[in-house]
Image 1 (tube, rainbow, N blue to C red):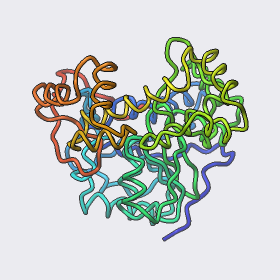
Image 2: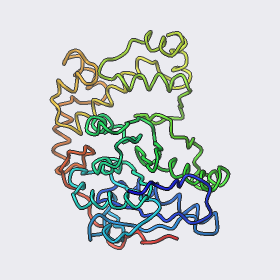
Image 3: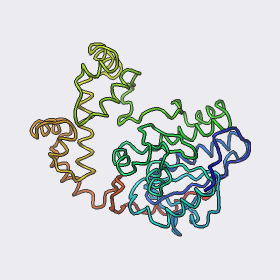
Image 4: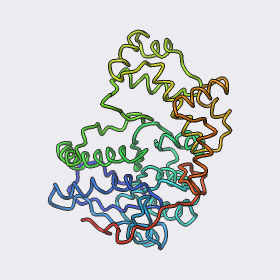
Length: 357
């Protein structure tokens, strides 16, 4: 296998890129990979990126929105500088022997490999992330870490490793692509690309994923963000406020003040809402027994869990699960072991053009 060429360095030559799109890929994740390249080409007035769309089979892939992406099969791709794998659902079904063999074949040419959303799962299944830093969506990260012990799993929004790039979801994928543009064409140029999307966030990889984005104009500062990260890492065994404050080198009172100031809530209530949001996800997205859901979210008794859940979500966990089951015959589960189908349908007349460069 050839060593991957370092594409994260200044270069005027167009980056030859293949975007491998899997069935049921999240439309936003797909756009996050492609639109920064399109915008870079537009601003540069020349091809900074030259890309094609590739599929796992002879069939054009369909996104979760119902849009289809005209493409050609991975088996016909000879080489590229960068292969971006975009996937979201049904990883067990998507990870066919032919697909994994195709990924290994492209890796052997020395191409850099990138995975977005569910893409890292497929790269890891092919053994192409062994010994590398990598991330996955926060919903899947625990399973990802358990399934791939030879991968250096991170909770970062996106990761960089030699010849490998991985992103946990759509917005981090935008950040990852902006970082790539910055290394090849300069920070100023990347900032102009970001400006086209009104994106004002950071594009550095070493930032943790968060289960909750800012709401109602409230934003974390450094202290509350670190406290939030500690809370998210210990949903099953809630940490006392004093311990969180001590680990952060501050006082419980100061932490209370900062949560009030920045998020208009208390640390205790914020922690409870994180646990109850995770409980809702486990109720709707898994078949865990409700007692296990309660334990996984830090409730020591079924009765206290039931009261808190009903107060937060307006119905019991059992009622929610029954309603979800009745309204969704084929849910799109994120988990890699899922084998459920998709209810998406083709939208007549809507496709994605095969080339944008």
